[in-house]
Image 1 (cartoon, rainbow, N blue to C red):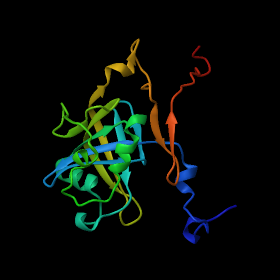
Image 2: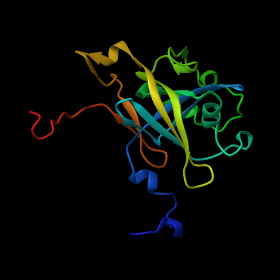
Image 3: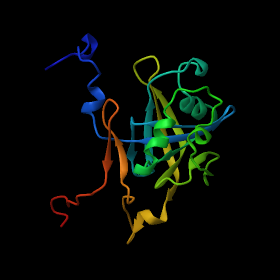
Image 4: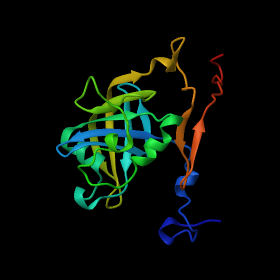
Length: 201
């Protein structure tokens, strides 16, 4: 089949996110004047090494947040956020934090997620995450579409759980990492294939 997005796809569900998959999940933690927020975003990735930078995009809006969602509103207010990596045992808690809730609801408390403080920024993080990236906002870019915003953050601090370091390398947690597929589907990444580039030996 072929379709032009502006004409619609004619399927029961949008196939776009199922095609661009698997995608890493950025479990974004923020704090603003209305309190703390924790929400998962699968339009997320690392985009630069030096300085290290990441992006994530918010693609819908809430009535109480003036055209965006809690995460992006808090980042606009404070200029900081943390990106927490999701392990398999955190999947159900992560899913709970994807609910659309009033801005003053703290998803850490709602989902029973232990909260810790970041070191380089005034922001919460997920205490038990395999890794967390502490980020200072570089820029928010308005993408095409009314509620589509992309945040670019420079990584100013990195937390790695001790059990995820072996012989100087970051390794998967025993339970695996979660990735987003399409629709309501997720994938568990529980094994790695090493393949040197040509000429690298």
